[in-house]
Every structure is written in C-alpha cells, then in structure tokens.
Length: 197
Ligand code: ITT
Image 1 (cartoon, helix red, strand yellow):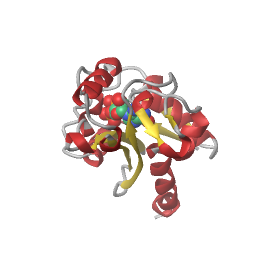
Image 2: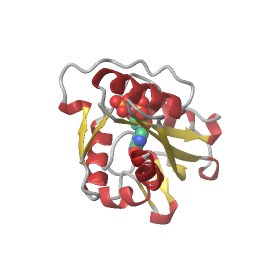
Image 3: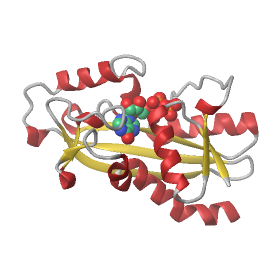
C-alpha cells in the first residue's frame, strides 16, 4: 500500500512518513517527484485549500491523493495567521513568519495568547467523492522561541499537558497529540468504508 501526499513541505513530509509507516503505508510526496505543478491555493478555508491541492493532482495523475492544509490560529489576532500561516510575512519564510507573529503579540499577557493548530486532510480519488478529516490541538504562543525541534511555528507553540513547546518535544511526543495526528486518526476511522465503497 502506498499513497501520494500533495505536499512540498519537508516538515509535513517527515511527519506523514512516520505516522503512516506505523500503519504499514508507504508515503510519497511531491518532494520525491520531478516537474510537479505549482498549485494556487486560493480557497477560503483550510479544507478548501486541501481539496484544491489534492484534486489538482488526482486530475493530473488519475490516482488517489492526500493533501494537508494546516496552520496556526491565534485568538487574540482574530484567527490570524490561519490559512495564511505559510506566507504570513514572507512566502515560506518560517523565520520571518515567527518574528511577525511575536511582534503582533507584543505586550499581550500569556493567558490571552491562546491558539490552536488546525489540520484539514482531504483524499481525492478519480472515482469517488473526496474524504475529509480534521484535527486540532490547543495551546499558547510563548514570548520567545523555545527548542529547535519540529518545523514552522513549533518553537512558539506551548502545549500545557507537556509543559513544553512543540520545539522542545521529541517527534514521537508531538506525533502523539498534534493537529496532524488527530486529523489522521479522524481520517482512519472513515478510510476503510470510503476505500471499499
Ligand atoms: P504544502 O502546501 O506543499 O503542503 P505549505 O507549507 O505551503 O506546504 P500549508 O499551506 O498547509 O503548507 O501551510 C502550513 C503552514 O502552517 C506551514 O508552512 C507552517 O508554517 C504551519 N504549520 C502547519 N503545521 C505545522 C506544525 O505541525 N508545526 C508547525 N507549524 C505548522
């Protein structure tokens, strides 16, 4: 069994490989392929964007494709950066994005810095309606980066049950509780029925 995941994000690719290998499913991503198209993610929600990414590749290659659209939603900033998480300050510039987020929360006390990561997963197929799954994880935005693990906003995301940021946890710790792990759990509860239908 293997699956194509519509991502060029190395951090996501690493997590999917790990999360699916435990289930005996081999993962390929756009990082393993040459000449893949640029996909314009112009949807209004995480799920719409995941659908655009997956459907584009299903149409092109005539195979089932899984896409992840994810990001961090900060309550004090009315949900920013949200679907714009990858391009908040600069296109896929994680350092600039983190700096902008910290700047926009300057002076805001810890208890008001609530946030969640969201992950929408969509599997498209040439012959059936898409399968959609979602997951979240709740935490706080710290005042300065902590830890070097994970990717993206992980060093800024404090997860109270661990008393650490996702930059300070191991990959296994993060993968046990993350928005992506929760979305995959949701996906797998629906997957067999969808696949066989
Ligand atoms: P693909 O579209 O190729 O998958 P992308 O990075 O553009 O890659 P998104 O549009 O879904 O993907 O943007 C997600 C951004 O949200 C990502 O670049 C990170 O900055 C952030 N993000 C998502 N999941 C994260 C996680 O587990 N830890 C830290 N940051 C995360």
